[in-house]
Image (cartoon, rainbow, N blue to C red):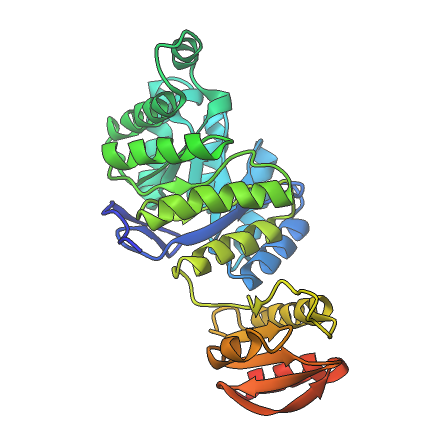
Length: 359
């Protein structure tokens, strides 16, 4: 794993972003931005899964007031998502937003950009410039349609152009993002941004799709970029609940060694040699471990393996803290690589959790 590229360092409500800080995971609310109770409940669920930052849309001044209510109870920093209305940005800052996400070019003239930059600077609140292919400026869109530029170049130019608007006002606590909906464009765009700016980068594939294809697209794009040291905070955009976005994001970071191992388990794909209901047992173990982790989201859990037969089972068991190796209607239970006895399918999950507690 390459070291993260050097960037500016900033803080979002106490969560360090850039400057070599751990890669953070964020998601975005999908409930009514005027419903404080629904927002607070969703934040609690996401926090329990290890989420670091929570973004919510602020389409009007009433939503900004709701953000203020949620800020009082939220365990996570709140990022206010603003489009077009600079007054919503000012109201969100006054309500206690920990960061803003906006495009300086679509909130009005220089006086409005200046007002937001000054207010954010006074409160020590960073701004994420969020550029998407669907919202490119007319000039860049015309160049793109005429073949005078490429999508990655256009996205990069848009992000850097918006960055200049803020830097011209003396504002430098900026995170950049420039998202596309396909893997190849996303990778190429972020590589350009990493070459041309020292801002921390928020990485993700926008409009990636429903759970399965969206997960695959994000995992491929983020995996490539993060493995190259590009990316300081991520969101896995899915047509699904924010909780699923958080789980996938955490798994991507764990797979790359960028987060402590959590409730994920090692399990085999099953075959004709399997004589136990491995799919059910593995799923129940995973669900039980997720519930366990939710009670202590920052705790590093033991490594657990659930294997179907004696071909690879004992070998995987040697590398796990706790392992189940399938036989005929039962499992051999291993702890720290050593067999400790046989357990039935019915008691297998309970036995694993007993040893999780003991370890």
